[in-house]
Amino acid sequence: MHTNRFLIAKNVFLPTLLVLLFANSCQKEFLDRKPLGQLTYENFFQTEEQAVQATNAVYNQFRAWECVGLSYIGITDIISDDADKGSTLNDQPLAGDVDNFTFDPSNAYFAQVWRGYFRVIARANLAIKEIPNVPDIDPALRDRLVGECKFLRAYSYLILVQWYGGLPIVTEPLSADEYYTQARQPVDAVYAQIERDLQEAISALPERSKYTSADLGRATKGAARGMLAKLYLVKKDFVKAEQYALDLINSNEYTLLNKYADNFLKVGENGTESVFEIGAAALPAAIAGPAATPYNMVQGVRGVPNLGWGFNRPSDNLVSSYENGDPRREATVIYVGEVLPDGLTQVQDNPETVGERYNQKAWVPSHPGLQDNGPGNIRILRYSDVLLVAAEALNENGKPAEALKYINQVRKRARGTNNFILPDVTVTDQTQLRERIYKERRVELAMEQQRWFDLLRWGRAADVMQAVGKTNFTPGKHELLPIPQLEIDLTEGVMVQNPLY
Image 1 (cartoon, rainbow, N blue to C red):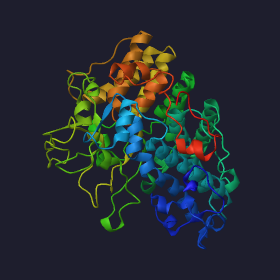
Image 2 (cartoon, rainbow, N blue to C red):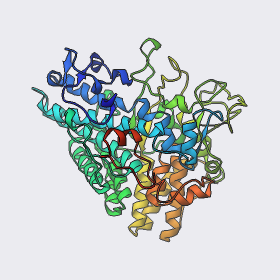
Image 3 (cartoon, rainbow, N blue to C red):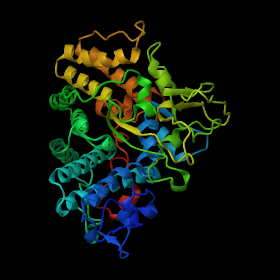
């Protein structure tokens, strides 16, 4: 199915599922269909409602297997020192290859996430181009929807550029003869495109408080600021990272939840600590699918209770990295014999599962439908992450006293009312404080698909992988993932492979 790539023909078919929230399967992929005499590229964008639906389609792609399923978990958490493959010994050898750095460009995980995130980009491109032409659309709504799509496109490119390096920069729907002629552009050019999209999103989007309750979860000015601050950390532009992190903080739109663990329960969804998350819902079994994700199932307890597949096991190294008494460890790791957060179910021993341990942040209570009807929102950017971005940038900018303010906010919330644990950080030496901030990011954001990207931008991936026994990691090679072999083949070499693959 060649049109499953990141490219999109102008005469694509928009099936009737566009009126809903857009199913995720390849068979229902609206960008990949040819005209069948119903809704087409040329006649769809006629009303405000259709403009909203087209924007919803961009969000919906983030719920697809290719964006948040096992391949995504594999090349964010499992690849890092936070997690091991988990599950049973022989289940999903492709995940084992990622865990052990024995993969090559033919590993299907790389093609899945490439396809998934370029589909987001393709949907965003279509909406960004066509929404301004919708007749009689309210200008404020028009600008907001385009801003949302630019934010989502920027986030997708930020994920992809950290995985793969240079990328094709596609910002327009492409015609059929342009499908396989798109070459990779330099990393700096990709960064520039992300920066441009996020700056324009900041200008167009409202603050979180300006949305109605029905629209909570949509991209906001704060989300764009936070993502831009993270881009600047990747670029090592600490001055601008500080600026945009503090802009978000000083907006007073966000606060830390009183209880750390609540972030990952239903009560915390789109709460005051949520800067951006992917919404999900388990609809009744008869219509399960479009609103749900496989994210919870992939990481769920395997055995009794039968909640999922048991992948993404929190590693021994992660478990040992917490300070004594840190409540965040209990909120992150599920152990055999533990009563789950519903207070009703105890995890039973499953001798087939390797090193039984599970990601509690992906746990969801009983819900309609099967395991893959996952209802848990996926937290992409939390306020505590932004506080630590600010701390890191401030320290790099020679402002340790201000950096301490933000790291200690995070620690204070984590310790709660127990003043015998997690004392405030007081060191002001830049090197020592840097190490404390790095450690704090790990334990605060563990198993939230952040660790690998942190290691990459810190330049520590090689040393850390070697230290935890992932000795197949090759410096100069494995900092980037291979471009999927399918992309190399379909472009007949226009797409160039990364070094040493």
